[in-house]
Amino acid sequence: MVETRQELPEQRSAGRIPRVAGFAVGGDSRGVESPKRAGQALRERVPRSAHGTLGQRVLDGRRPDAVAAVEESSRGRVPGLRPIRVGRMAASPFAFLRGSAGLMAHDLAATPVTGVAAQLCGDAHAGNFGLYGDARGSLVIDLNDFDETAVGPWEWDLKRLATSLVLAGRTAGAGEDACRTAAFDAVGAYRRTLRMLARLPALDAWNAIADEELVSHADAHDLLGTLERVSRKALGNTSARFAAKSTRPCPGGGLRFVDALPVLRRVPDAEAAAVAHGLGPYVETVPEELRPLLARYAIQDVAFRVVGTGSVGTRSYVVLLLDHRGEPLVLQVKEARQSVLAPHLPEAGFAAPGAAHEGQRVVSGQRRMQVVSDVLLGWTTVDGRPYQVRQFRNRKGSVDPAALEPGQLDDYGRMTGALLARAHAHSADPRLLAGYCGKNEDLDEAVAAFAVAYADRTEADHAALLTAIRTGRLAAEQGV
Image 1 (tube, rainbow, N blue to C red):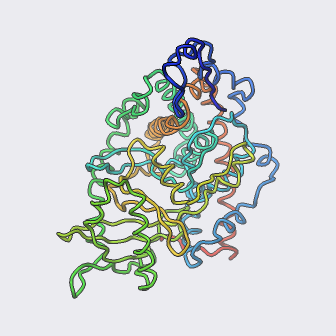
Image 2: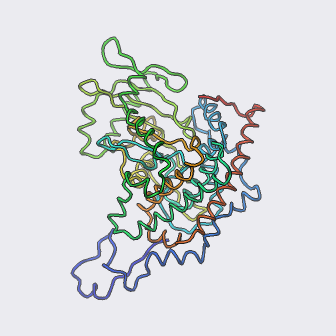
Image 3: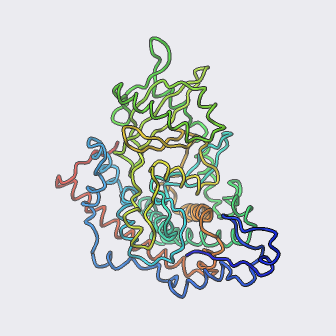
């Protein structure tokens, strides 16, 4: 839905200030429908209770076989790594959800949407929030995975988050009431955060909820101890520590990676040279003021490193650089494939991503959603494939939602719901979304009901995956 504004008569007659592209027209809202009222009007077309339905294709079984969907999503990945991906997805229903964002997007495409567009994470499950370092080394907390980012219906991110909380809670052994409450509270925090942002001046809303205020804002005090432990660990999760564990000195000086199969392996010289060559064009995608910083590092070595659950099998490299003192910086050069949302967005009334470069799509989406992003984000092309580039081990840390105590799960839900609302509000007007979401708990109830039902569906999909492994249809390497 596109918000429109009309030029006021007195502005036209005065003629002092021309209309400027990219800015609103006028300084007040006289004669213009407010975003809040526009959001409220959307309830007539899409009642909030409608978000509790799975969608007819799921109910009727008119969807891809779960195992076939896993096989299809493995196309184009490194063949020898596919069993690792299957093994990681087989670990639990929550792990299966993490690796099946495309299947869920297919299912969500048949569910009701308001038509309000936002920059989506595309894979906003509960494990994709975490800590990382800003330019000065301080820790911030936010969404931290954007491989599937695209502009689309805000409801998709919210439903994926809520479903993942139910599955994470079940994996941790929490009772069904606790699992549903976590999903319910995540949606409530999302809704309340939008209402708060809608009331703030635009600039204040853009930078709202400083990390030191997040726990109080989300009423997540039971998480304090967990967050403190994760923060302490994250502070030591640096390039220097990774290099110390993963490299050894070369006879002629410098460092080189050491194989740690199957996760880390050195690559042939030609492959390493191609990756290193790709860092030249990458430098041109970094903010100009930071290019002299990169110029002070020399490339030492390149290795292939397996990452993630849904990302396993994509091409991902770590590049070791050293400065004049021998201090390391490690960059990750990660293949950027088409967003798994892309084939399904048109059915929901949204255009598929049109970025000329998939790495640029990822980087642009990340910058658009995060309050603070990695200053060395960029993109490049290696052997004709698009890649994103970012710092590796940039003081990253995360809470494992599947390992939380039952009493912490709802706190984590409220915290992640608030963070998701903040991220969406950078692209969608929070006044419009807040007008639709409203004051009462109708949306919370509906999305929580969806989350429980889709979690049941995911458990059945996971069971089908385990059967395919047992019967030999899919090879799986577990525990890696």
